[in-house]
View 1 (cartoon, rainbow, N blue to C red):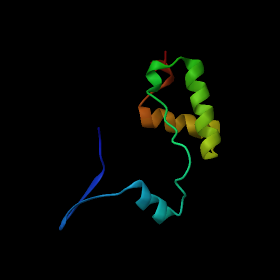
View 2: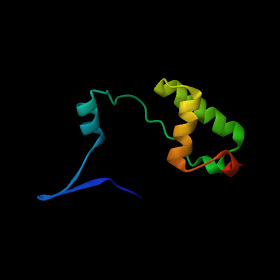
View 3: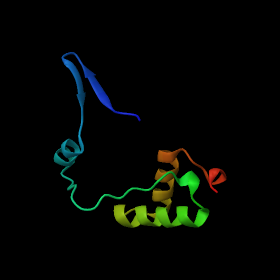
Length: 80
């Protein structure tokens, strides 16, 4: 598992979801949404997941697909 830690002169510091919420003034309430590794899914399931991300984040389907591809390191050739 990868973590993001800042290495500062006085020691290490991690940023929490609560910190991000406070700094960006974005509420972090509600249900958790998790999508497992898309490599295990069919193209139809992946498409449904991309639509879900698009709807929840209020971005275009193309933007959601690009983010899914980047975050999971996948391309259409790796699906299935």
